[in-house]
Image 1 (cartoon, rainbow, N blue to C red):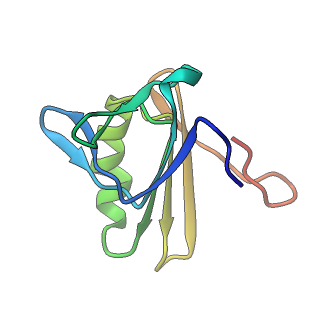
Image 2: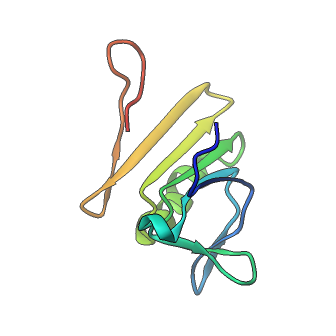
Length: 113
C-alpha cells in the first residue's frame, strides 16, 4: 500500500552527525511537507530524526543493540527495530524523553507503536 508523503527505504545511508553514517536494512521516512523531522539531501543521504529504522542482525546484534542504538538515540531516531535472527528475537524501542523504551507485545502478541 502506498501512502503519499511516506517513503520506505531499503539500505539507505543516513548521515547522523559528523562522525556517524549508518546503512540500516530499512527506514520509514515521512516527507518534510508532512512536518517530518528528516529529509533526503541533494546528494541522496538522509539527514535528521527518522521516524523508524530497522536492522536485521545476526553476528552484528551486539553492535546494533548498543553502539548503533546509542548513535540513533543521540540523533533522535523515533523508533528502532532490531530483528536478532539467530536468537529469533525482535527488539522494538521507541524514543521517550531522550531514552529508548522497549515496546512489548499486547495479549494478542502485537506490538503497537
